[in-house]
Image (cartoon, rainbow, N blue to C red; front, side, top):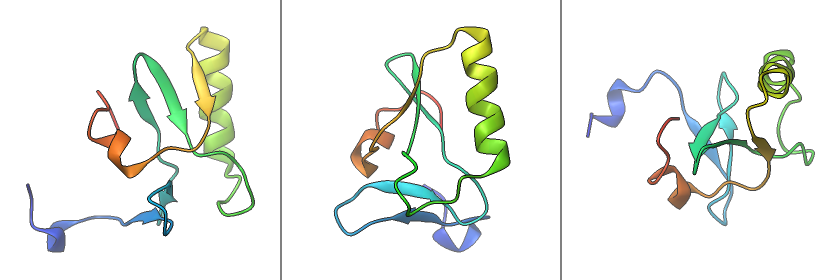
Amino acid sequence: MSDPGDADDVLLVDGSGLVLECGYATLFAVLDGAVVTAPLDGRILPGTVRARVLGLLADDGTTAAERPLTLRELDTATEV
């Protein structure tokens, strides 16, 4: 594992371990073949790149889900 001091961005996680977003980016994770990102529940920004990526995934027929994503799930993600 790299030194946390080498990080380029931060991961924002709520008190119950739900991943929200990064400091400068939306976080997407691939879990069981589906792309998952946190839902727009008023705690994260509805970014234009986020919307564009979700649109491109839909156009491509790739399964995508906006749902709560736990920090623990990131350990099992094939891509983040």
